[in-house]
Image 1 (cartoon, each protein chain N blue to C red):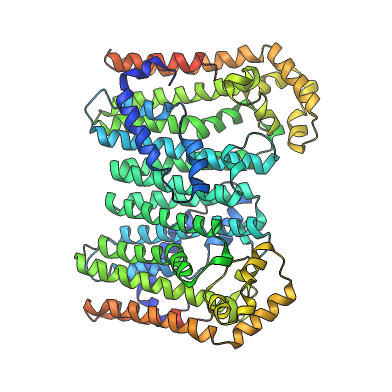
Image 2: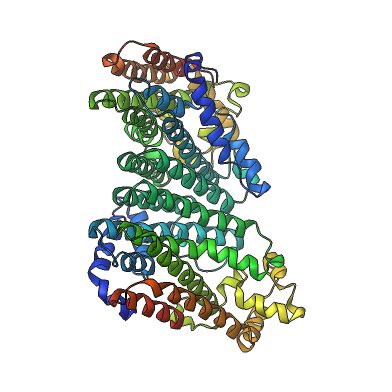
Length: 319
Length: 319
């Protein structure tokens, strides 16, 4: 897992793992094997968030792990379609599951995971929580739609924040909220944990986007700069182009596909050496602080500590 | 609507219409307009089925119309992805919503409708019914996956029935079942209505597949033979190739894309003039009879009559 704070809930995470594996039991090997490749492994941060958030009150452990697996499968489903779309838009970048399947098949495998997630949620949660699941899915999908339609060359930092809020923070927030709700937490605690999840998600995505610029190829398991090559403009790039007007038309060049590999490498080097990285880091730190602060009202116990530690670990991670 | 038997529930169908329209209120005109094109109009058979099935007992009308709209949106979502896949597989055939959007956008619009359907279902139904929604979605998607992976040139009639059972009958069955369940019908009635829906769905799809061979271009709103051109082999074609061995390798030629337009036209003419059509019609009639027979245990009232009439109308339709 890589996050020592999660040892506290290793039993629950194992249960989640076995629920996730059930979703890979598809008859056709052509589908099953890429699905396994996608679903086995992974940081399981969203399930962990949901489980830890359920620990402040008392919850049915079976329902908690079902919901936690549902959140992870929902995430996986959006990942498949998201990768497909990035691929379709740029014909570039990493394509794991997609590279082994036709586009149509990849669409259907994503749908299948959506349906599986809905089934797990329906078995574990009451109507209002299932409604939140559906609502969050709408947020994520609308966020991706906006991203697909948006012209990257007119994007501002505000657009960026809106995008990662929809794309990442909404599901983090829903996970921690669902954990709190299912354990019967009072509204104030539900709100606190949802706020924690939201800000953790914002920080998480910013760190992800920084790592895509400065990370180590080996540790990341993918080449740096893959966002940029896919025409996706992130916070470090926005900070950089704000200060370096000669690079202002860069996102347009990217989306035209007219930027050469050499220029991309040069740009990445310039961004790495610029204050854009530390400015972005400060933002991530700010969200992490907000996340941790939201937990002030919770009792000081090992679960609260684990959430605090998780926030720090996610900020300091290298992949 | 074109089905006189549905005038009985025209008020409810109007409510469904307005719920469906709410799903088209998307900010971006680029998405909104094609979505409207897809969602406005349509036969609304699945909602009608759900509403009529709820009429034998007493149900909350708001819940009924929400569920009915959910079923139609779920259907629309699978349609979008299905069209996309057929397009991706053959680069041929009708592409309405897809032709106005990129593939990635079409994937997301489908996801958005899935999520909207899930939201409507979550607001109206209890856990077990939502679970059935999720399960049916899995059936539909797995059916499409099998279709995408299947080699059409080794397909038998048995494969065909399995495919249309997953693709069409499962949702028809779920719609009538959901109507019965939400009205508090006893299990025997739930089973009867589910059986009605299932067999109606089988008949509906077979008629659809016959019309694709013999239908009138204008009435259908698309050229005949579009299944064939997309490499999809249906019942009339299977009956024909069973008896005409010289056409046995046809599906393979189709899937290779090596069958010329002239040959397709010739084949369509031969199938039209062959007993394959009446053999297929007999099958559709058989399912229609089974559907009507399932209603024997229900009280003889205008709603039962409407369901009986609906079965006949669907069998006799021209589009």
